[in-house]
Image (cartoon, rainbow, N blue to C red; front, side, top):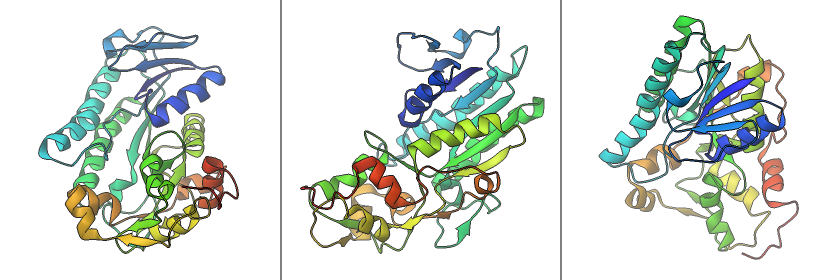
Length: 303
């Protein structure tokens, strides 16, 4: 299958690239930076450079600046909106002009769609929330959904926090533990809905093949944990001082609005559609995921 990927050089995208190349797919990757082509993988810097014949059979849209990449100033919020909403708008316009449209669009979104929630279990039928991250996800998904008008199957993959070694949020999450400090943000009772990167990749591949699946799909592990429980699980892998909270006031001072939306509140997101469709997780619980990332029984590891 010929697959066009945007954001194919990011944390999830690079893992997807290797997975799909190993499976024998042909990839075209849209990237702002030049990269040398490799066997079965072509890089382009503009949509106009994507070969129109044969047209991509699938489009995977992962592009977007990191939500945690900088303090949420007005300028950075504009960067977040432009990279997701406006970028997806341009992608949809390009797809509309193809002589043969792709069969499917797999569009990344995020569990931020659900806004600031407490312990309420949230399936795909849960209403959108409020706040900047929710409004961003809603606008992003609305742009992607427009391609359904010309017969393209659209899956909106609402990703949880993707965990793995070597990149993504886990690098920052693990840093205090590596320094011997076990901590959690705020009260610690807020939920962290996460997914191991291997399972996120497997979910993309699963949805690529499931022709009956469309609409929103929560891509999270089936066992979300509270921030305090995550701290307890991490302490199995590091020698640390007893756990302690990082006060909300300190986090707001350091991170501003981002602290409230990404760390001091959470969402208890359940991947109900994946569960109902028979998808199998390699790492369904946080202990399995951390063993894969850090190695088993590493409680005596020095910081």
